[in-house]
Length: 122
Image (cartoon, rainbow, N blue to C red):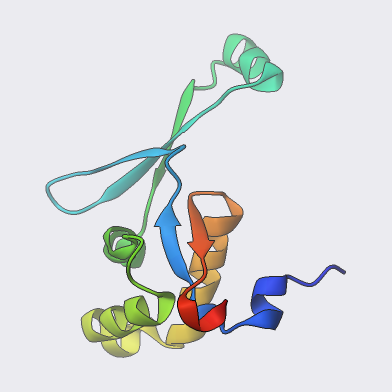
């Protein structure tokens, strides 16, 4: 199994998440975030024609995701975000670091965000 260099070489909490400009998103009046994914490619075109699949999928974030998404501004590290999440959700967010890092990894895995290094972890 290939090891991710980010988790080995530096503290994951020191990375700064940034939205991927490839994906559009919107926030409604209640603060709910929806990420839009354009379904492109041959397989998706066939699925759209044959199975009436949408051209654009919508991903709706949960309560904590709705809070975290606007905090991803290219300035705050994951550690900075964790402090704000703890202030907002308290014990409900526990185990805080494990949950937040896994959530960030999921966003990165779907390429909704990118992680950049801070000066401390270069």
